[in-house]
Image (cartoon, rainbow, N blue to C red; front, side, top):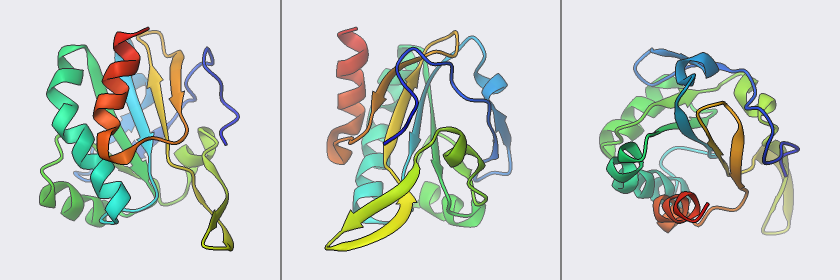
Length: 155
């Protein structure tokens, strides 16, 4: 769904996480990043995805990757979600859709015959130079951490 492509520069962004900390693309200058966009805290698929990334966090960290989650949920909702599932990475509260629009992951969705606008679950893997090396447009939520590790090990 995203118009961004592998080889594109990661868009500039700014956001606040569940702890009130500010993050920008410059926060990750010279670092590798997994930035994932998801629809909603505490829903089955989003919980599976976050927990899979939590379970792969140490291995990704050892390979030099930071993880950043983004949804339209509030800081307060992110705090509860993060604490409930012991998530070791920041979750950006993009309530005004600035990052979502910058990464172009908002659009028409279909579910059970109904059409609506929403966040397309999408993950971007970014190298130290801020270049997008991989885009996963339909992540396998239950094994998303492993999916990312497989991708970065084979490239």
